[in-house]
Image (cartoon, rainbow, N blue to C red):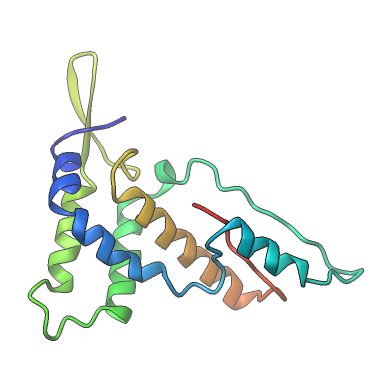
Amino acid sequence: MALGPAYSFALLALADLIQRLFFLTKDSPWTVKSAEEFLTHIQHIDIEADEVMVSFDVISLFTSIPPALAISTIDGLLRKKYDETEKQLKRAHIIKLLELCLKAFFTFNGQVYEQKKATPMGSPLSGLIAETVLQRLEQLVFISNPPPKVLGPISR
């Protein structure tokens, strides 16, 4: 796991902010909250002869998200959903904090390296980032190719 100052900063300084940013993912039409909700939904789905039910398993999502995609996704959601009019914490501040927290470092053979190509594993931000990016991907795919019924994973 790549730990460093950014991890500690994210853990301590952004714990409250991370919880506050989860509103960005709350209104997805494709996410279910529990196994019970998932079962309730699929019990009422009739699969026609020319239809197929599919399930996708996302593997290694955290380590596959470029930081630029994470930032642009959250920035886009903040532009749509975050009213900064009467708030001291502006969208630009949140983005700067995210940029700082996405910096991760690791040591190999006594040399310190910066991880530049993926979301840091173990970061408190990684779950939120993965969810926002996955929802963005779902939105892009399903807008142009809407399926009859879609449910997201039970837990991501």
